[in-house]
Image (cartoon, rainbow, N blue to C red; front, side, top):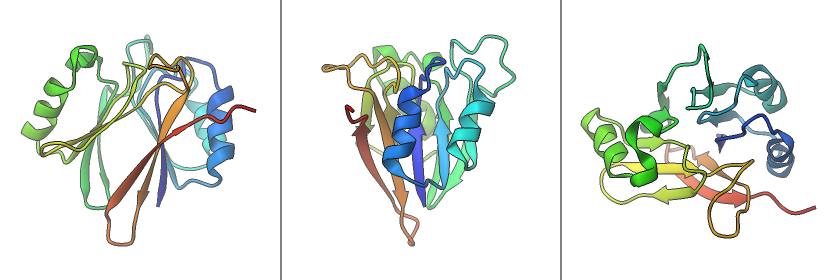
Length: 162
């Protein structure tokens, strides 16, 4: 199963469209917030099941703040991350995920990509596909491949310049 993990599109979809083109068919998309009301459009262009949560810029959104997913061998918490003060580090969000029995936590908000497998909880942040803030400021996303044994493999990817 091939899963595209994105965050912080902020109403700008060109790079999301490019990521979908780069990756080819996907089985599922996870969007970690700040879609700013474009959930239907995102689901349409993904052309697959979409799991999406509200971010701090999703004002008046009916979206949930968090979701619990089961993918492969993993219980996963998806959230935007702002309620866990992720701009100050990932200790709080990993501690909360562990306390609630999650194997993995996926979040956005910082606009900086991260794959952290230390400790008992794997933390993933795809960065921002629209407004990156890390060194080099390259739009980023994560591809999660789940093999036939239910094991997940992650790749941090960047939008190729045309």
